[in-house]
Image (tube, rainbow, N blue to C red; front, side, top):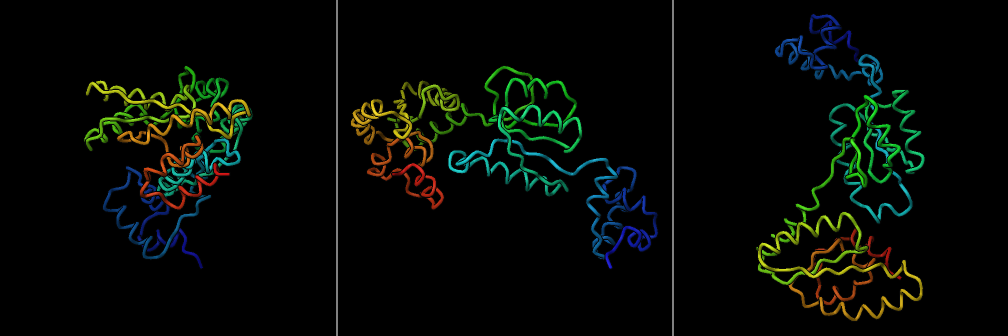
Length: 288
């Protein structure tokens, strides 16, 4: 028979209210009493009922992670799952569960509005991929815990968090300079990519302080080009060989380079000496 809170209270010689407060770390219970009650609960093998606990604190015990889990997202944004893993691990230690909810940018505002109104979750973690001005307007008006992961692509007054990509560029450039490299190339996809431009600003800042410059190569994926553009791309590939003799390259992951059609150049100089099996899986998506 399962041990109940009544059994713990009886063993400790206190009321069930005292046990409940002690296990929930209430400031009204002395630390010595808390420790004694927790020791008894552990010894008896008592585990609070999650539903009863959530009911008592008028909470669902659930945090929603909302983004668009479109096809191939695991290849295009593998860091997404590292973020999810970190969130789930932290919440588990706080007696919360993480629920994943796939939504498109178009469907997100209405769904999130209903979630907030009906209090179906205790908090929301929203990936910036599904953020829109309409959703931002909803979030800025409600009194509900939420956090947007990723910098919004438009001006708004919401709570968000992101990596400092400009500082990341500075760290990368300083690392290579400390290694003795002076000629560098920065490779990106689309020229107007906001993240890449942020990193490039950081790189240029460090390089300018050393009175150096970095070569920038913007290259679309050949798989996304039409026949005429693909022909021009192939002609441009000949120029890439000159970068094979650059001291070092500031570039995305191996699969991103493969997507740009530049893999052969960098295979020749063996740029990635510690490539993992997962890197190979990501690369395979872009090989034909």
